[in-house]
Image (cartoon, rainbow, N blue to C red):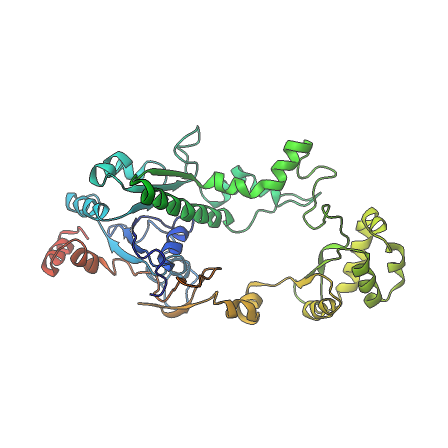
Length: 410
């Protein structure tokens, strides 16, 4: 791999889904050796994404999950039955040669298996342990388990999805899992940097719900400073700009199936250019920003009626020529398959999966001039690298591995 920024580190990884697996994916892309551990007796149920859709084609099964493959590229995968003493012995040996242990189980799972932070420190005094659970290990909610919709609701994100006069719509996808993964990646790197400076390991306790809470910044500030809730009169409308004062500023319907365009006029000059393009008499009532702001509902209704008969990409081209801020609201397929910018940035690399074959996955939205990331290997099939890790790193022979497999340890 060319991505060697983190090539000196080894991660003993229990993460799953996205909130955890998305974190160690970052590390693996930059060269860290991430060894993902799963239970052979549970056939991938530690991570429900393993055998769930989307699938590349008609093939299904425990190694075919598209989301699992996307979140676990460039990792090694082994199985250990931690209900057995031999399985626990192998894990102790792996921890002893790792830099960090990472997981996003419910609080207390590793401790119940006999691998609390104190127990891990006895194995390796400078080990870094990073846990990422719904509510962290402190506070009254610590024992509770969470799932995407629960975290959205508790963190306040569900409420922020509501527009004035409308009920909360929910976010549709676990965006707090993305945020939790990003914070977890940063936390691992910060702890590794601290150990480089001091030689000291530590336990990093991360709460996914609190990570999601950080996405509520404007809503929290509005309540703290103004005592105003999101859905009250005068509250911030996500499709209108108050700072700076701009109008029109919103999302407008276009010709087609659920097609829309975003338009924002920063000043009167941009509005006048748009009004000339529109060429209709109703624009005369909105010559300055004060007039447009004072009657935005009428302005938006008129503008929406004008855009509704037009193609969103044609509007995007025309308004860009007039130097008016504009963008077609792009659907996933349009963004991935038709927009040249993401391909040029290398955001969708193709990796090779042992069972699925060649398939496109998410890359990283950043490039380093000297130690860039590199993704070529798909996610591991269940236990795909068990023999490699046990022989190469833990000194077992192929015969030892065969015996362990026969005993149900791996």
